[in-house]
Length: 270
Ligand SMILES: [Zn+2]
Ligand SMILES: [Zn+2]
Image 1 (tube, rainbow, N blue to C red):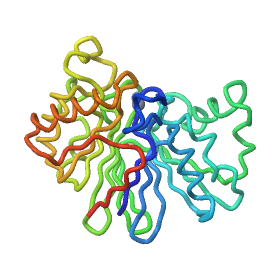
Image 2 (image 1 turned 60 degrees about the vertical axis):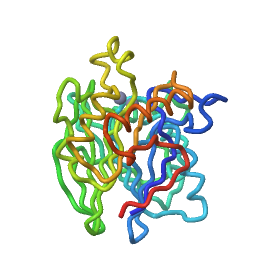
Image 3 (image 1 turned 90 degrees about the vertical axis):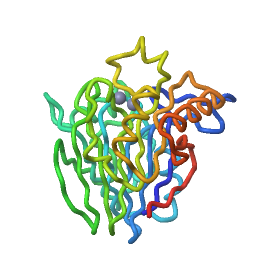
Image 4 (image 1 turned 60 degrees about the horizontal axis):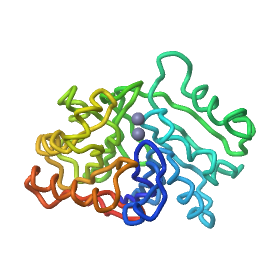
């Protein structure tokens, strides 16, 4: 499999001179299976550029795996070109809400007055599948979802193909629940995990649903992935500040296999 990071910022898109190296778009990752199948993880503002890159390919089927409904993970969807392609079927997988169906939550955002086009007018075929603690297989790929610690229904995903694996847990607060999502992350080839705060910042942000660097390091040591990508960069962090956090995380984890997520980077999962 191959993963391409189209957005790795958390909370709010943050374009500008201080974020050019790691990028300002919110979370979206493209995953290509060995047979060319397309799985998209989250639909933050990064998904717009991914959609443009698909202009010639016109994929007939896209699986979109949403971790949760916070705006930074869904706000790009209305600007994703395949949504306007009548030949495309988009299957949206996401956490089962406590009240309304997942479709209604997404349609409430992607409809007037918050969005100009009513949800039912998108030309593509859109299907929904609600998940919590689930496992399924599609096109030779095995996927597991499990709830993780974050405000509101939220899941992480583990995706495996031909013995290679990726865990995607962009929003998680292991300080409140040490094993949150750990079964998904255990022993993967690539772990993409929340690393939003410094220890000092976390002191005033407990309960907001994110991970401070010391907790990130403990989590990575416990999960023991081959490689880890620090994800969900805080909007207030400049490129230089992120690099300082990367250094701190590497020292605490004790491994050089920890890197900052960077917009535009392609990672082979093997
Ligand atoms: Zn988020
Ligand atoms: Zn969130």
